[in-house]
Length: 433
Ligand code: NSS
Image (cartoon, rainbow, N blue to C red; front, top):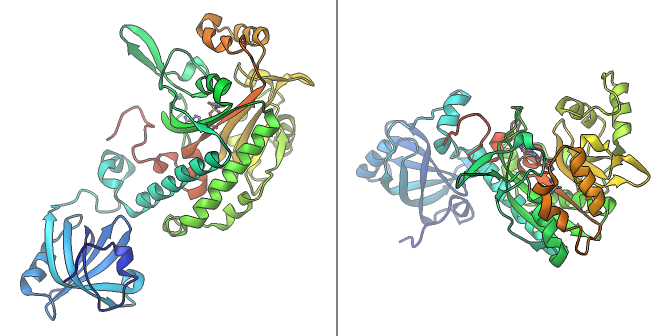
């Protein structure tokens, strides 16, 4: 008798002729009369099961016949090689039990996007989306490995906040016992407060943006990987960012080739990203390159998704754009001492048309200068009281960045909408499951 259950992956490693028990969900079902073929899906993959009157008791052939798509089942049988089965192995059934029937599973293939979003709670079982969750998990693990190896402290900032980090336009307002509060756009200010004791900190947490623009790379709620370092300038921070991206991408290529292939993602375009340093161009050079491509753009204009996409044509790796005009960037950035019109700021753009995945900068660490930068944007310094305080008591030069996890995964996996990198995306003006 077979003892415990084995996964569909393990079945393929056993000697043919092994007796095993498996469990999972019916992924495909084909009834040929005397024979019933079931493809079983579990967390590890798929396995073909065959009920055949030649070796399966009649009662279980009937049960196999009734095991419709997405029913959960337990099955027992003997493994056999069969080149026609996925993975080259099938299980010849001696027993099969339906645990939870599934009558008329709502997703049959070929449905439109709205229908699929309404049924997201069922759609997430698909093999492609499952591959995505597995790649996502490897990315999360690699982020943690990376920061651990660099001596960073992982910290837990709040999601309910009092003030805007990235401008008022994209704030989600919350009723905080009759007073306004906001869902965080970035943990940056809290990380800045924590460097005064821990020096190097990072966090992986949701950020919220009430974006006006509905694009394939914007979510209202996304996962934000952020780090902040005392005693580090813009160059040092860019080095950290490129090494993080190279390391994480390498780990995904090591562990998740099968999943990438399920998503039909070619891996060659990712190879150049394993090598650092990444190219760096200044904002003014980006503008010149765009003008050279026939774009009507001038120094001082913002780079939108279209401009970014054009710039990615020039590179086969992620690359940095640095030294943006101060007024294009957030109020907390430090101006370049050699040219105070420009910020010590950088974006990292992913190739293949994806564009910005990271934004970072050196921070203004001088109290008076920061106060003026807040006022000159028309913000109220009182709203930034505690943030200003950090510059009053032992201020240090420091820098940090934020990486959009879904944007990064969009590039690595090659999917063309950020919604498919997260199980329950928040990206339209209604909340699906
Ligand atoms: O606005 S950012 O460019 N920068 C910040 O929030 C800084 N306060 C981070 C820091 O220095 N600690 O956002 C950072 C990244 C950006 O490059 C995108 O990859 C991602 O966050 N991002 C988004 N991803 C998905 N959806 C939306 N709406 C979104 N907005 C930003």
